[in-house]
Figure 1 (cartoon, rainbow, N blue to C red):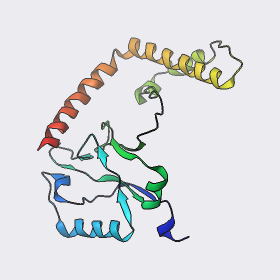
Figure 2 (tube, one colour; figure 1 turned 120 degrees about the vertical axis):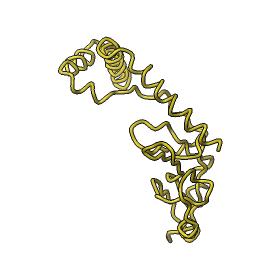
Figure 3 (cartoon, one colour; figure 1 turned 60 degrees about the vertical axis):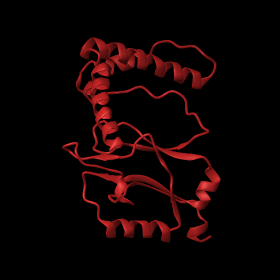
Length: 189
């Protein structure tokens, strides 16, 4: 089997754009974009379209935006998997948006709960988790027992977090909304 017949997925931060529209308030280097596009063509790769956002990286000062992160796939991969898109999620601590390859026909269910690093600095956290995990749950199926134990831990951590730190979710949401608003305005330029 040649590399052309294989199912390839190459993803990540390529530190390069394909055209001038993928930069805002940044220098565009035509020759570098041409080399990047030539690489994609030589390898016979296709780019999966980015949904919801135009840019995936924001500079430290928030003024320069670029689309650096992407998924490139082989034609055979695309034929095997079908209806794909790339979703850019909200940035949290990085200057890049996480990107996720998504099959439009598959639903993976509810999101997992959040855990904040600062929680693990608190000496009470281990006891909270152990007590929640050891709560009695009944079922004949191991997967249901595991799910219910995880649910107990999630509920205990949520309650404990609110009592210890207030409503971090609201504060985090406000900060994310401000950032998202700025990025949306930048996408319209």
